[in-house]
Length: 512
Image (cartoon, rainbow, N blue to C red):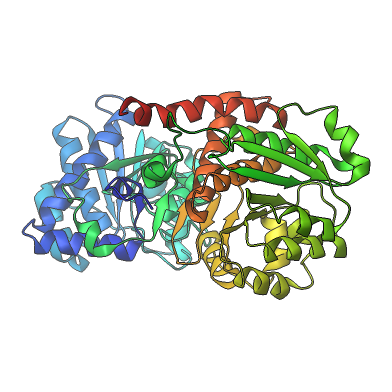
């Protein structure tokens, strides 16, 4: 993690940690109703921007603080000239604390309560006539499926197709893991407070949130010092200080030498993609090592990447006696089977920083404990980069949300686990985890995972630590995908790395 305070900007808070941030702020002298006022005002601004001037805004309010934010928003919207229709999930007599104070301050006619087992004609008319709906029913801590009348209400809102502003999180979405257990509100915009939660970044929660707005309600960053969150958004704020920026005195031998092991002549492309990506990521030298019969195929396609012919796992051991070869990648296009397992185990014995991807993972499907034991004997960073299918083969018993499973897998294996997908999670054995959010959908094409593995190997060659290398590689991969744009193929990505690399390095080089 970054040694500076920038990590605080990347922090994600679980619902329990956000409650603690509120508690510490209130204990420091900021009344809870003041925080609620600021939250409600932020919700009102979002709702006003979605609706026409003087339009009708329907606010659906629950009995807790989420509903209290809705009451504040209703008062502010009414003062701005909007037609406000407030509906309570439970009678006003059930309100207490700051939510009750907010209701009393609202100063609007008594709001009707939604009751019964079905949507009434009155509620149907309220939804259909609204220009905007504010979902202030439940907060981020909801951990049970919604059912009965509440589920019917949410289905009616979704079916109406009105723009929805969700307070904190769309009702039905879990703030800790992004799960939607049963029905959930599909929002146009979600307004949360102080810091996002994991559920804002993990699917399906991310899709249900729509545009995410994080409002400043007066909670100071210093509260994070006591909370010490372990989950982060994967942004440069988290790892910028650890990014390998070359100095004027660096040369190719000081920037590390990565080795990518390639497979048979008919499957050489994946390893070449990875090797070029490792070079683009900053490794001073990269060697693609393959069987002798694949050498000429690779030579026809590569220029700056060096080539080495190796025959069998025993040759790998002899090759890696050269201590200058400090980072290794094996798996892309290498082949699945006993030979691959033997090669991986020989590599791990040499104690190099290692990335295991694709076939190197699948080859241990029937004996993952053998791999984990070998990693446990290894003192250098090991990074595993599975997609969901490969993950399930190695960790078939792990259940729960993506964040929970990635953390458990990292703790079990002793490796940094990069669980890939549109919301890639990077987890470290010490419990830290980061959720990525910059990957464009056009990265879903053959070979892009090989490029990601190569970037990670190139960063490890430059002595970046395992968790930071995983986070940096995933972010750079997403940024390069955005730079390449729609229609990209995996060959486009290494060259597209130049733009995000320049943006990362410019601040550091300006300071020198």
